[in-house]
Amino acid sequence: MQPYDIIAFDLDGTLTPSKSPLDSEMSALLVELLKKYKVAVISGAALRQFEKQFLASLVATPSELRNLYIVPTNGANLCQYRIGWLCTHSYELTDEEKKAITVGFEKALAETGFEKPEKLFGDQIEDRGTQVTFSALGMEAPLELKEKWDPDHAKRARIVAALKPMLKDFSIHMGGATSIDVTRKGIDKAYGLNEVLKLAECPPERMLFVGDELRPDGNDAPALTIGCQSRAVKGPKETKEVIQGLLA
Image (cartoon, rainbow, N blue to C red; front, side, top):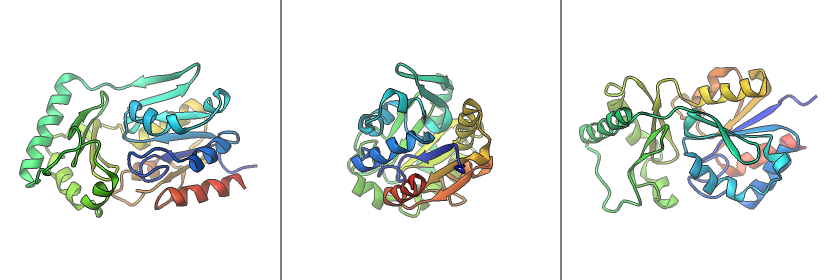
């Protein structure tokens, strides 16, 4: 008997480089995985980013897609495929909450001496409905610039430390290469994966989570608290090797 029923993945840095499309080899591997397992993908990305970055390149049949759970904005949404994609829950932030988060970011950036880049690539603070996300260089910054900006997470760690006392009623996560995500209190990858387990009627020990940020302060670390198995990877190449092992 196979040891897992559900294989769950982080998106950025695990299945794809940050905000980059799924490549054809990864798509083919995931389709084979969907024939044998239920698969969940969880990220701070909004559903529209999932559609652009992940679903547009996933060449799967409707029957295969029914084994796929999409978990945008760190668990504030959970979507399943029926005739199309149906989100079974959505914890939308109120206008007042969004304003409080935006003001918090502005104060934290000033307090930590954040230097605004000479050029921003798109919006720096984005309203994702269920989440507000700060991206230091802009939401559409080139990958090579993002990877150089905060490789040790130290810049964002200072901003997060300043944010926490201002936004005590929210959960704050570092995501991708340059982002900080803010959701309602308690909404994180542990919450989102637990919702997947409930829907699938699966015990946590029958789930494997694969992510690139599983260290104690990493944005995938909450997944370690639910009792599932885990596998740390350093990028899509290692993720492909994990999937190939599962398919062997």
